[in-house]
Structures are given as C-alpha cells and as structure tokens.
Length: 152
Image 1 (cartoon, rainbow, N blue to C red):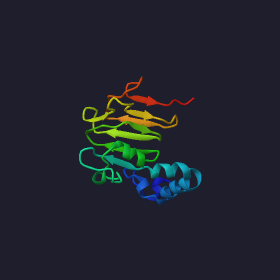
Image 2: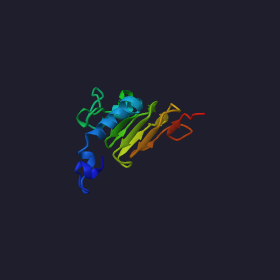
Image 3: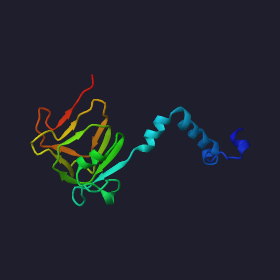
Image 4: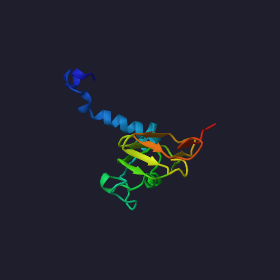
C-alpha cells in the first residue's frame, strides 16, 4: 500500500500513523537482534556529586548521586554512563568495563590522583572507555596519570 492509499499527505510523517512499523521493530528485537536490543535498553546513567552527596546512594539520579566516581564505577555495568558534577575528586580510579565518564567541564571537574598512583587505570583490553569534560592530575606513573591495558 502506498502513502497516498493510506491517506497520508506529503507533509505528514507516515511513521506516526503506521503501527506496523512498531511491530516490525519489535520483530527485529525479538527474533533477529535480541542481544543488541537488550544492551541498548539496559544502559544506566549514574550521577556523582563530590560536594553534597554520599556513597550510600545508588547514583541513579542527581538527587541520589554518589560522592565518589569510584563508587559509581563499582555500581556500573558495561555500557553505562557516569555524569560527574564539578568538584575535585581525590581518587585513583580503575575501570574494567566499557563506560562513558562525562565531567561538567575540564576546568571544574578534576580527578586528583594525589601523586600516589595513576589517576585512572583502564584495566581491561576489551573495555571501551570515554573520558570527557574532566582533568586527570597528580598521577604517579610512567604514563603521568593514565594507564591502559592493550589488547593483542
């Protein structure tokens, strides 16, 4: 059936009026690509606020944010995102799964390794990690604050 036979005008979006498109997408998720559809819908956004929250929280909303990035990483699953509020975080982070760690801005969101170890270590060769909007400083290693495990 063509668009004109369905009664759609050329200015309308026919997808808004065609329930069979939703059915087709459901069929693809149910039979063809179930693992991909499950991963896409299973990701969680975690929140960190180093100024006013605590690590007893579940990190699942800005009002139940964690105090440390490390706690949010410990709760996260592969594919999750962690939104980090502006603050200085005195932490040495180890990331073992694929994550997006997104700070409020490089000049206001600081991971300070304290000169004791790397500021951030990505310990799994299979992890895809995005670090954005933050500064990593005072790490102590040959890599100056970052350490990664490379796949072979």
